[in-house]
Image 1 (tube, rainbow, N blue to C red):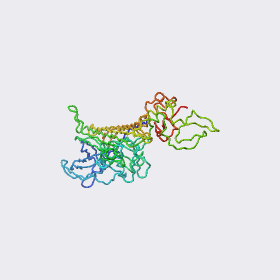
Image 2 (image 1 turned 180 degrees about the vertical axis):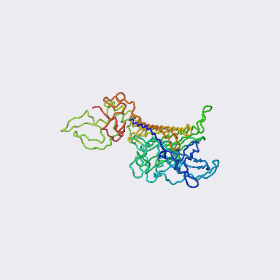
Image 3 (image 1 turned 45 degrees about the vertical axis):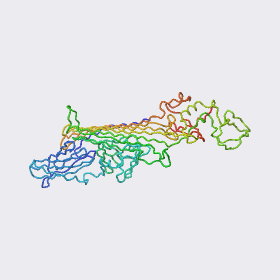
Image 4 (image 1 turned 135 degrees about the vertical axis):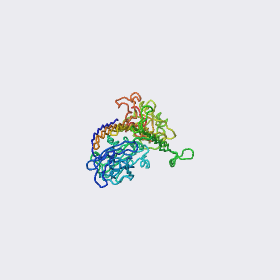
Length: 561
């Protein structure tokens, strides 16, 4: 089954004042020594990592606002003729945050500088929204691996917030349950680089649109009183800001490792060497990041202009199960000899006066009417002649593995491996066209592949009699944004986003033809194993299994009437 959701969103905003978005803002008032406001003062914010400059000017009331600033570390400077230059350093701007930095000027020459290194105020005075910002180092310090089959999930930080419930789904790793402050389940919205990236397949919060933890600059979580532009959200808004490159080359490499050698053994088992069995577990969540200025030898030098940041995270796991037992037909049963099924117990006497033995098989060809009752005689020695066995049943029986140990029940152990791989590459490029024009591009691909050998009592059996199948989850995120400072108090912000979610499951019995491969005549669903129902298990017979769904599969002791 295929499910595909595509969301293309265009956001065109012209803002003259601060706006609530994934980016931040710096605002304040410029005043002289007497407390009077200073109009037309030149104000600029400079990004300490990229050197990007964002200029503006104060209004007639002495107010200024620099909107749509990427999160990072900034320096704010104010220049007015007749006053010393005012410089405020070390300002950390978080996602969706508005910093209020008021500048009090001192009389003097502009060649003189007054530098203030005081930290930014923690009290929010510009908005009433309640938000929480989680930095990358915080996400690295908490356990992000929520389950065996899921890559590190950044939404796990929700558990750090008051009034929240975060519940991962152990059976479907792509699905999560999020509830905040009593609001309906999964009423949140996820925004990546300022635009909506919520999974639209009706699955709530999903890992299909998540970014790699090490590619995230900051995670802003707004839980109440957020702006009207987030009206689609019921309980919480996740604002994810991805890392950008700077003038310095930076990189990292990591691996989170799990191995069965570190695990305890399964109680009451024996590995044949005097120790306990340890089911094989191989988990390696690894990746790397690399970013800096774009540099092409003898072609282009991007310092102070063009920056990139690339991230790749991959999580392959392989878990082997080797201690589950199935009951499969013995060689004698496969030949029609069910003598071993007889228990010796007598259940009564038939109208013919013969004893009825427990687990006795009766021949339909001997059916007759005796004293108003239909009566059949049992096969001699409880053995069905080979010529009486149905060829279709024999073809199905041939697909069932042979026993691996003696006995009539629990006589087959078939170890199986469940491989799963999740891969998340991403790339962000920032380019400064000028001091007033800036362009940004972001791309991300979430790819999940999993292969299950089957479920039910035939778990681990080969296809087509098992439910073995493959699952593919793919999500692409594209973002392009353009910022232009048209005037000191007028900013143009253009954004375009594209989301693509794609789920695909490969049927367990692909390219199976029941007519040519089993000899079964009739209309069937193309490429699927036929549904065989109405058969029940018996002592010494194969347990009912599963095939491609809820189809039950029983022993091949069927005979021709």
